[in-house]
Amino acid sequence: MTEEFENAKKWVEENEICRVEGDMEDKGKIKSFFQNLENYLKEIGTELTIMRKIFSVTVEIALNIRSHGQQAEKMPNFQHKITASIFENECKILGENLVKSEAIEKIIEKIGNINLYAYSPIKLKDAYKKMISSGILGEGRAGIVFFSIMLKSNHKILYHFEPIDSEYSYFSMIVTVKENN
Image (cartoon, rainbow, N blue to C red; front, side, top):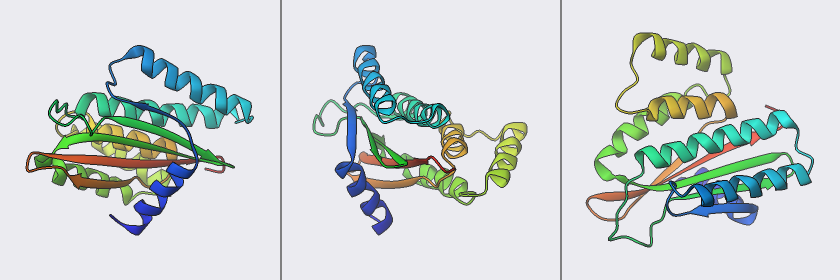
């Protein structure tokens, strides 16, 4: 685990406002999570444009977990999770889910390539347009999800993989949204 990821995860834990765990298909659970998040953001007076960014990033993370997270009934201790944390003008969203260990290299490559454009929205948009026009979307939607998250947050995606066994790893991703983006 990198020091940067470790510090960000600690920050998330210390500033958590709401979390959802388990089946991301459970509409009631997801709706409750987003309602709690919205209520908190309104309570602290978050600007509408920032609320939209936070919701958009969180929805992308939830869709990514729902689409690519692996269900492993034999591992009940490793639940899919989304945690929202806020302090002052900064929000961090932590998404956690099981992935097949064989997919790790592709995920690292996709995030690594996208992180090259962190803090450079014009270059990121150009790379996104190039990817769309060339049809290089890769397998599934994960490449688009990571691009979409970066476009909305304008911060690099922090990530970590924790090996569970030879077949599965626990994937954690932290995305930051700030008011001054």
